[in-house]
Image 1 (cartoon, rainbow, N blue to C red):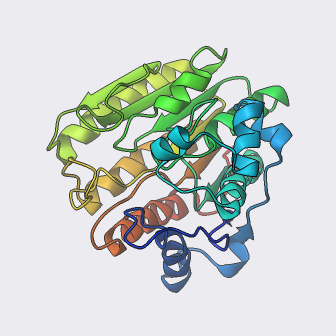
Image 2: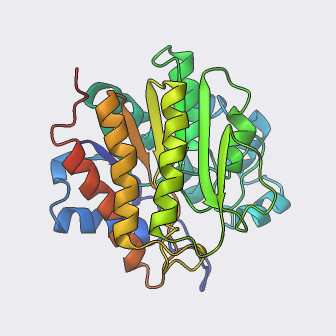
Image 3: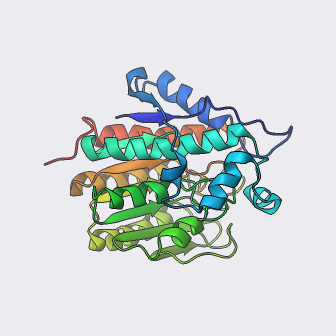
Length: 304
């Protein structure tokens, strides 16, 4: 299973910034140390060019992020100060998603140790999301006629408002978001299927709702799946408000990935949110998704 990384791009953040930027390198190291992936599985994420980003974003927004002339209010909503490192890292996030998508078409599954930036809209970023990797990759899949029916399964605790604002009207796309009802973003952009969970939802209820959602995904009959595997539903997450355990998250991953494998649908993994304290708990939860993926796709190939 090819896995793309972009944590070598520096992102200078002020002292005390709440975003746990270190988690990306920590995850890469953990996956190798625990023998979940091999060094040969790791690939450096390529940089998406502005023309590719323009599949889902306005030219003014892309140019503003490239030059640092982006509006200050956008940066405030984004939650990051502008830097060249932010622009390059964000392009690598999208490039990794595209490369993983192409590999998954061949191998059945691939991953991006970044991405799932589902709060990014066509003309602005917000919520730590600069460019929308899944939206760009979805539009590219459709443009190149690599897939006719694309499903996005978004299980981050925060609703994927950017996915919906960009892709909701696209033919042959189905967006399923299951998230915390009273969590960010506080004004949701409706998806094709939204399942909003009350604060404190635990493993059993979460998994039952997920099974219902996957029935609707199955009815859509996708030929490609993007899986936003955010681990912020974990009960120790500081931004989550749900009460899932490590075992519950792994059962979640089992349901999604076994569905893809059983149905012969290529799937790529986008990292999504994770804000536990200590951050090592989020890293462990992310790694568990890859444990499940390696078990379900032992040969990284879609059954014929």
